[in-house]
Image (cartoon, rainbow, N blue to C red):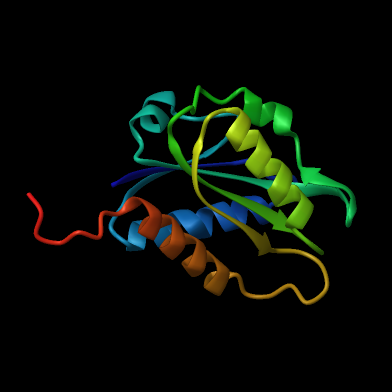
Length: 151
């Protein structure tokens, strides 16, 4: 399985989360490429079985919170009919940001398999390994055939 992890990061939290996610997928046996959205390997992305796209949450909690710099994500190659998992990093709440990120994916015809917020900053920030493992597991379950003995 080939997985392309693409992210944009302002202060390094989303980059750390993307690296942890990439390492988790690699530990599961996947071939993984990890790229900032401004410097992707287009061929790897086109060949990937799953796209993982991450950004940080910008704006105030409950008022204008949104996925950051969505314009940069619009510059990514056509992803229609491609399977993707999305993540946002956040300080207080990922809810509005995830809703808008899902809308962005739907507008582009992406086959969304999983989305999740990962808390990397702010009060009560913690070790993200549990969230990363959950993200990886749910993404893999959504794209891995469960029928054993076929073929």
